[in-house]
Length: 606
Image (spheres, rainbow, N blue to C red):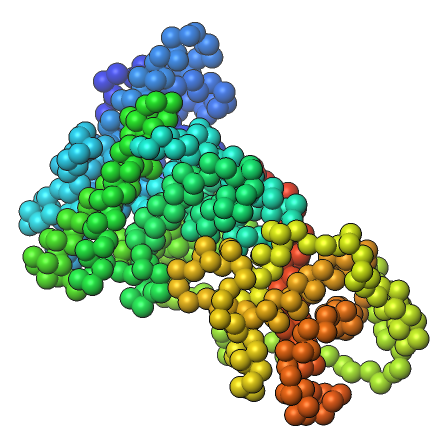
């Protein structure tokens, strides 16, 4: 590619190829100067097919397929990468100078995992050759102050996840095996049992190939909840999870490490989500040094992971650790620029959110041209954007429904036609699905019973905000937990459901499974689904539930006492969770193709 009036290149036979012709046309059309763009051989040669691009352009755009072009292409790529790295380092220096002239002090630099970025900061003065003595800072070109390097923690976490999924096996310093298969087995078990062990990991997190860029999938995969679930299943005697301790430790370490580099709230309940401050300094530094040594000892195929081809994520976290320690000592303790460090401010999320805002301005087009970028940027500067409906001056008033005064219930089927169901037919319909409590075919497994006991604690937490009777409140919460999963996750105060609440929720789960299997909770002909579930579950509750209330049963109207009210509230809260969970499961079964061929066919109409 050349511009009219530009000097001829010295070696036209080894010039890296330009972008595709269509991209060049788009660039030229959006430049105010409208330069004359052509290939290096003069004469304004017409654009050729992209098929002729084989690594270099010799001006004639030959169609030769000689094998030497592979070597030429690699050589040209290496030369181009080295030149691009030098230019990027020069641009960073220029930016630092311009920003300094504006009176802004730059303390750190953040970037993603591209190799050119790591080479760039090494040109500026950093040194990553010796893992035991990393130099993770360089001097400001004007003030000579230290500027620390922080590879973006979100990108590093995704790279760690990708490495584990690709190699399937990583060995730690103690010889423990960190295996991806345990995550696959966890998802399989959750699908078979119908309930999750307090995790957000699903099939989507295992088959993430089409969604590699989504940070939340990586963060939810390498999370403390997944680590706790693996340990819970291992201690429960599940044979397929024997040996999962090393994997659980690996996941917890990188979860804590990511939390420490994503801190926002000074009042966070989980310790490692708090900012780095004089209060948390000693424990943070101890744990960070421990994690650093742990990463050094990780191996793939008997080779140190820091010497492998997938070292970027692990090396990036080690650079972050070293930079954070020195950053705190230099700018908090020595110079007093900061009182504490909220590490989220060191991430690249702000730029990612800005890119998302720019892309959203293009409507169906998420790849703006230069002119479209300029227009979107101006709109963002002047805050000319459309707010969501519930934050504007006008709200939607169309949610009001018209009540009918009929003794016949009106339901709408999938085709939009109205089906009239008489009151007698509705009673008969409900009687047909009366739960057979004596049937052993609907007995719950130990895993499901434990998870239901854990969910019961959340039901108690939600009811504490609405129940005002002190005697009923005392009946909700117990002195000990009946869930091993909850014991594993008890790093802070969790509500412990009483035996009465656990019994009600387990009976509710039993009937919910029966009803969903025989009728289906998504049946279009069913009205008032929660009410049907509540009424039929209450018919089959054991008498021990009522005995817990004692004399409190007789404090109110026998037909409307606190026993009926409290049990209905418990069942309502539990069924709300279960219906929502089943709805989410049905959505997760859909094959996600929105990100496939994104540049060719935008979103595939999803």
